[in-house]
Each structure stands twice: as structure tokens, then as C-alpha cells.
Amino acid sequence: MSDKTLIILKPDCIQRRLIGRILQRFEDKGMTIAGMKLMQIPKGLAEEHYAPHKDKPFYPGLIEYITSGPVVILAVAGPGCIAICRMLMGKTFGFEAEPGTIRGDFGASKTFNLVHGSDSPESAKTEIALYFKPGELLEYATAADNWTVKPNEA
Ligand code: IDP
Ligand code: MG
Image 1: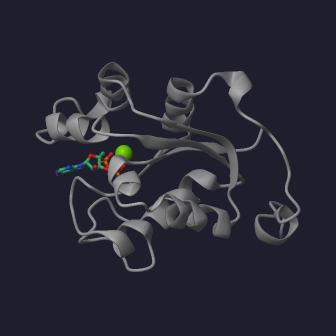
Image 2: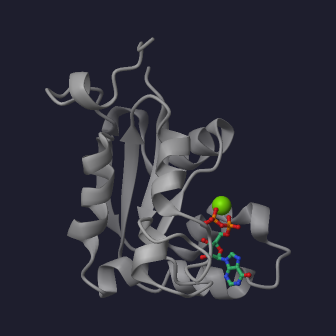
């Protein structure tokens, strides 16, 4: 099974009508969409997802933000996708993220940073299981794979 990571297009992304442009960044890089759904995250699920942050001062605001409106949940697949997606996203705070990254190009907020991405293989596994049942993910190759993400280069 190829590497997978959980990406969330957060409520600001949907409210600002940026779904297409942000999703395009991942497609352009050669990432494969293994699962995709539009949902409003219930409070309990948000609390589970962000449990590692429950003692942080920004936690209440984070839960309010992530549950405030619809989000797009993506399981993204491809060799090295966890690190690659984190690079595409940029640093956590928009005002620190480099131009050319999603967060660097679309905002300057600490909280409203458009996109979530798993930060390790462990968190990717846990997070994907929070949002997708195993049968909901599709494994498939695309014609572009040989040109974008060929895993066995010298
Ligand atoms: P990450 O999304 O880059 O992995 P984390 O440290 O895991 O960053 O934080 C989770 C989310 O919590 C961030 O994406 C952001 O929305 C929010 N957040 C993190 N730190 C702060 C802060 O200091 N103030 C306000 N919101 C924050
Ligand atoms: Mg994180």
C-alpha cells in the first residue's frame, strides 16, 4: 500500500472559494486523491483529531474554527506524500510561510491557515482512520504517475 496522508481544506478555504485552487496545488505536484468528502466536522471528532493540542492556549479557538463550516477531507496518496504535502502547505503561520506555499500565498493568520496535513506516518494513519472507513479509499495508478512521482529513480 502506498504512502497516504490526511489533508483537510479548512473552513476558510471553503468560505473563500479556494477549493479548486488549493486542490490544484496537490494535483500539480503529482499527488493522487485516494479519498475525498465534504463534511462539517462534529465537535467530538474535532476534539479527537486535535487531542494532541488540548492543553494549548489556542485549542478552544482551533476547535471553534475547524467546526465552523464545511471542510473538504482528502486522503492523499503517493511516495513521500506526507513530507511533500507539508512542504506544499508551508509553515503553520501564514505570516511566516514562504511565498509559493499554500499558507504563504493565501493568508497571514495564525489560526486561519487554510489547510491541515498529517505530520508523520503515525498521525497520518490515525487521522485517516478518523475520517475514512477502509473501503472508502481507492488505490489506483494514473497516467501521470510515471512522469511525476516515479519512486525508484537513481
Ligand atoms: P500544523 O497545522 O502546521 O501542523 P499545529 O501546531 O499542529 O500546526 O497546529 C494545529 C493548528 O492549530 C494550526 O494549523 C493552526 O490552525 C492552529 N494553531 C497552531 N498554533 C496556533 C497559535 O499559536 N495560535 C492560533 N492558532 C494556532
Ligand atoms: Mg499539526
